Length: 316
Image 1 (cartoon, rainbow, N blue to C red):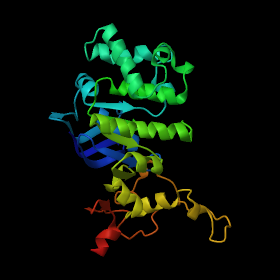
Image 2 (image 1 turned 90 degrees about the horizontal axis):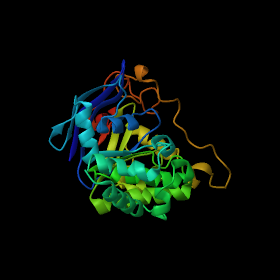
Image 3 (image 1 turned 90 degrees about the vertical axis):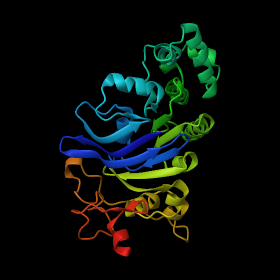
Image 4 (image 1 turned 30 degrees about the vertical axis):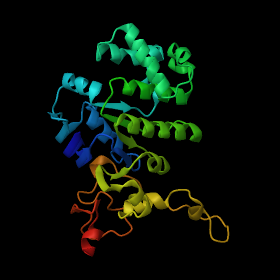
């Protein structure tokens, strides 16, 4: 079990993650969505102890019974081996270009699991099969540039599974892939989480992928979790204005065509996510929100029914 309580990540004067509280249990599949710059990746990095050197992490993050905020790198290395692992966004950058992919996957098995080279090779081949890499023996001897993007992503997933982590964080794992390959990778991650009773934190811009692969969902904006709940419920009945804006901006038939078939402009959220140092002190969505109230920019709303919004406070 992994529990974050008021977890914050500060970079200089700005907070990339602000007071996030989250409980992740074995088998949970949680999607994290939001625009670029909203804190999704930084939250994932905080949960694996890989925030930038200049970042200041505060609050609490407990992996089972171990408090990891303030832990040294050696302590984190132990936890990364057995408690939490991450699949990074760009596999070509994450894999060593001068190392065969089989040797890359064998390394943690030898270092952290204490296997012999022969045992590690057998286990790595088994992981290649589990994640759906065709002809594992041949792929095992190849370098990253010799295999496709989808296969590189599967190698990264196999690497993350080597020490049987309790939580797998997948950071935009389908961004560089075509639609068919992305669909298969999404389905693979969901299946692995179910089969292994492993928690999955799926960070993505792709709302359809989140809908397919997760049961619960977090919406982040400006480092805050502005809405949370069951994935199906949030997607069908969003309560926060930001979530409503994200969903309305999806390129769906009803969003791009008038009833008579004429094209119409796709709805958008005005403006852009402000820099960390310029985020409002109150609701981070202030300045872009279509239903903004006078106190939104200065007073932080309290969470009600999984959502932080002054409009909900005013309605109760």
